[in-house]
Length: 68
Image 1 (spheres, rainbow, N blue to C red):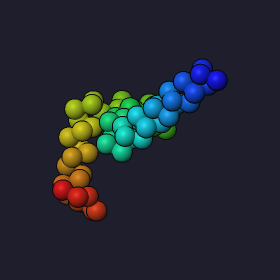
Image 2: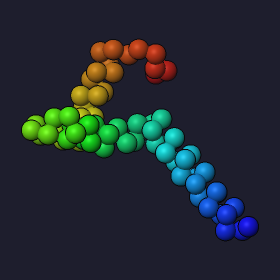
Image 3: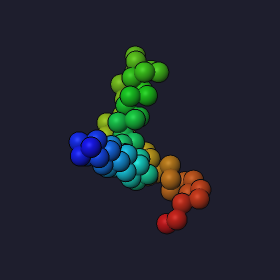
Image 4: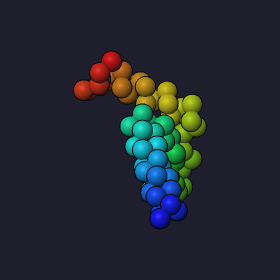
C-alpha cells in the first residue's frame, strides 16, 4: 500500500515538473534539436545561444497573445 502511494506521488511530481518546464519553455531547445535531427538529419541545428536569440527575436517581431 505504502509503496504504491509513493509511486503515485513520484509520478504526480514528475507530471507537474514536465508541465511546468513545458509551460516555461525550458525544454524548447531540446525539442528543437530532436525535431531537427529527425526531420533534417543532413543539417546542423542552431547552437543553443542562436536558438534562444532567434526565438526572442521572433517573439519581439510577432508578440501574439503573450502577457508581457
